[in-house]
Length: 149
Image (cartoon, rainbow, N blue to C red; front, side, top):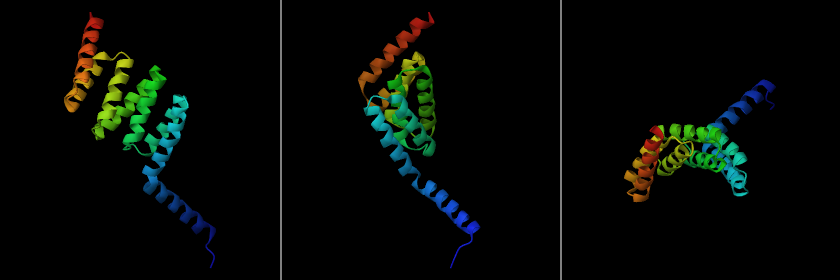
């Protein structure tokens, strides 16, 4: 029995779409692994490229979001940091994650949004009961106050 070309195309398209929907977390994981290879080799720009695809494919992937923001910190350029903060903001609207909060706070600090970084560090300090983050929040607050003067 042969299947008409139109039906074969429809079957192939449906199968591909079903695979993308069902395998989305696995595809994001594979993209993260590939990005990790570039990050380890000292190429955070290419790594962030792979993490961007992973986040686009699975916006609820904690690993992809955290590594995207971390790569932005490694790149240390304003556009990359802004993109990292945007991804972190988007992820944290849906989930509460300590590691992403910490990375977002450091990214905010890096772009000199010290007031927002201090606020985020206070939240992290309250969640983790870690005085180091409370101290960083104090430093960020005092620097932000000095900049406002």
